[in-house]
Image 1 (cartoon, one colour):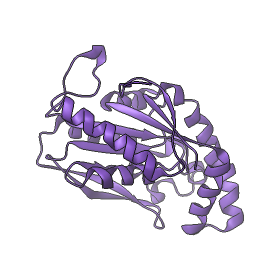
Image 2 (image 1 turned 60 degrees about the horizontal axis):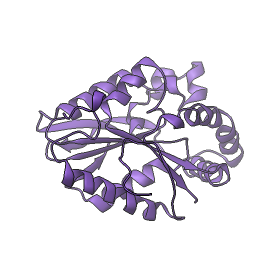
Image 3 (image 1 turned 180 degrees about the vertical axis):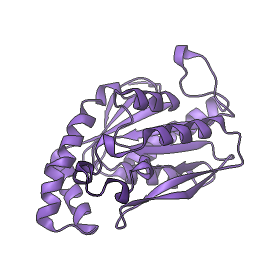
Image 4 (image 1 turned 60 degrees about the vertical axis):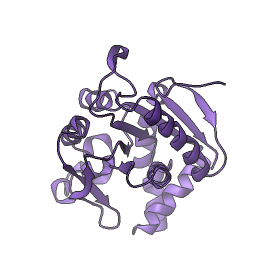
Length: 241
């Protein structure tokens, strides 16, 4: 296949484990850091730019695709001095804000996030002109975003952000995509993804019937939207399990 630039769409069937996939993807990041330490992976018009060589990498995919696991494994391999994860889920609207509204039954849908604040954070991370930037996380079980709970020092060269809607075709989300150097889409079969997703819902407090209904209902509607954006990814990673 030869060398494939990170900003070129392609497909690659990877071994069964996310760990093996992450090892190959981490090597691609290391190579890019070594070859172009002071350039962004991709600039509109192909022009070099960026601030001090920071890479903002997005991992996208439907619920249950393994985005959080892949991001965590990439970070483990690259090391804490090289990479850190900033999840899009930290920008969920708070439960108190949507309680009693139709949004409460569709938690995780694209309109239950705050893309404006997410965009502002990415721009601060891109500028890399603060000693430390603090980002929110999302606490599963509590099911709430936690403000200023991730510290990103200026010295960290790779920021991995993972979320469902990084390729969505809406103005705010297109602006978010514009701040990311590359977006990699994780693709996994429904036969693997759905049981994993149902199990996660059960683990964090839903009954089995409720978990299955949510995964096949609201989650699946979100997955259909997310999957419709896959053709716009820079890299499609096909996971078999």
